[in-house]
Image (cartoon, rainbow, N blue to C red; front, side, top):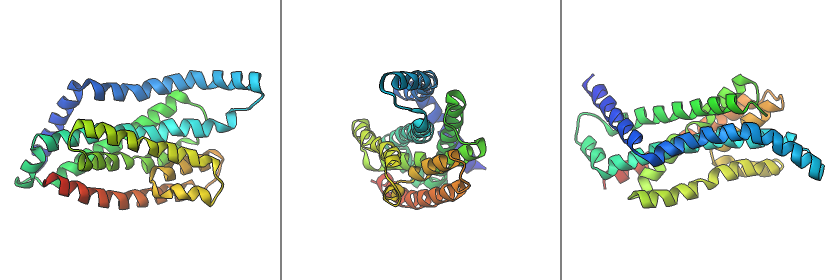
Amino acid sequence: MASTAQVMGMLRTDGIRLRRDRFLIGTALYIVAIAIVVRWALPWASSEVAARFGFDLTPYYPLIVSHFVIQLAGLLAGILGGFLLLESREDGTLKALLVSPVPLSAYVAVLSAAMVALSVALTLVEGAIIALGLPPWPALIGAAVAGAPAAPGLALFIAAVADNKTEAFAYMKICSLGPVLASGVWFLSEPWQWAAAVYPPYWASKAYWMAETGSGSWPFWMVGGLIVSALWLVVLLRSFSKAARR
């Protein structure tokens, strides 16, 4: 009980940090604003492209929408969690945990669960706002769950390799190429498309795309994404634990 209370106290402190950081607040609002823009801009752009160039954009709705609701949701939640972990590492909180009754793994587990929940919630909210190119809701929820572990994965990576916020921004820009890779392989035929399978959120997008076409294979891609994510999280957690002791 004491350990649980201490972990929750740390999470409350993280919440205070989050509310005070304008960048993190702006990042959270950004993705919801983007969803609103896409909801109205995508049909307009589709009609304009069709009228001017005779090109039908609607078959690409699942690609465009999945990029925002699957790929960017996990990226955002990971950025928020990564900066919170980095601040805890900078101010010595993580080192204090190493010699306290509260295991570091407990704090990371609870914060990771919060990031996963945030990622799933963002996906569903964005999907409800955009309401275009969506698979059935059970599949959308499944894809959201498959993509959500990317959030703690990104957070652990940022907190492990960056020594300050300046470095964290640089690594964040590098990581932002991941969603581009996952969405870009849409244009490759299989099996070439599977080259992106090493990047866990690709599996979530693939589940989304398959479900949108009416294929019943989307649960396979969902489960595959969770397995690949679990492998990555084991590696990243070890790297983060080493960094916390430095």
